[in-house]
Amino acid sequence: MKNQQVLSLAIGSLLALGLVGNAAAADTKMEKCYGVAKAGANDCGSKKAGHACAGHATMNNDKHDFVALPKGTCDKIAGGSTTESDDMMMKKGM
Amino acid sequence: MYSDSSLEPNQSLPLQGRGNVVVLNSKFKMNALHDELAEFSHAIIKGVPSSLGFVASPHYSADIGLEVYSNNYRGNLQDALAGAYPVIEQLVGADFFRQLARGFISLHGSCSASLFDYGAELGDFLEHDEPARALPYLPDVAKLEWACHRAYFATDVEPLNLARLSQVSADEYANIFLKVHPACYIVRSPFPIVALWQAHQPQGSFEINLASGGEIALISRQRDVVNVREITPDEAYWLRAVIHGKNLGMATVSTLETFPTFDLQNTLLLFASLGIWTDFTLGETS
Image (tube, rainbow over all chains, first blue to last red; front, side, top):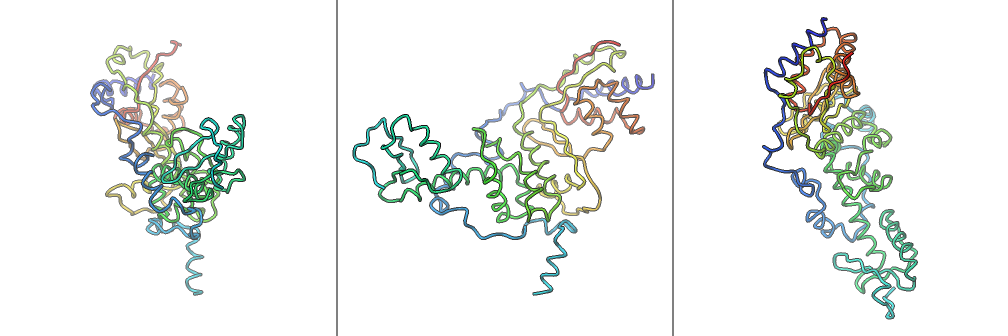
């Protein structure tokens, strides 16, 4: 009985507010195109062709220096690394 | 290494690279073409010299020609990974990410014709990658990013038809089975993954306390925009029950048993505002 009231209230408010979140597909003017995605972030067209021939192409891309530690925004996250204390010790040792 | 002058067009397979042409050796007959292609793709994917006598242009050796293909292959997959995992790339930095990607690509070949399908296993890979394990939240952030990536490419679905819902009598509400949008994902973590993800969006804040505990991320999509937000354990419990095929009555009762303060009204409205309801069916009246 209580559950019935809870459901009535919840669905009643959904109907009253007319909330569905997504506009009907017919309203959507812009269709997603499979080849042009994420603002060009993942296309294999011109960007990649440029990459392939601009420097990387004739070098073996695998023989880069080994990057021992992440050097990105993870530094901004305090307490986020399990090896931070080791790094500190290494720095002290040097 | 140079081309055999007796080459006939149908016995060779010219493959156009930029500025150099690699031609498979004609001494193999047509029925060996499949084997040659297999060897050729193996050499590209593994980045190893080929034992076959590939014929290159006068300007490049066969090994350099193969390396061009090999680097294109890896470069494409690497860019596909960077496209799917922009937050991971920012977290670890471009150089470290490139190294991670290289390790991942050497273990995971591309199994789909679409690059958007590549990289699903990065989260699991990060759990076992030695230098990356220093950042224990990385695998879960990667799982969140993969969910965003899949959400972006999920099928478009019409939203819930409220006019149809309004025709259901209130006695039947408990028998409603709600359908959830294919772009909807739940990712749980013992780390504040939503805060970590949001820090890397424009105007994100880095005031993150890793000790603040876990977060449950809800990924959804409205039009072309993927939304990531934190939901509470009771909201997640109820939504999971609905996704797993419980009707509204059963999902709500079981959630209230575990979370007595669960607020169905706000939860239903929240999920509606995120566009995750697409349809409903009515079960048998009990």
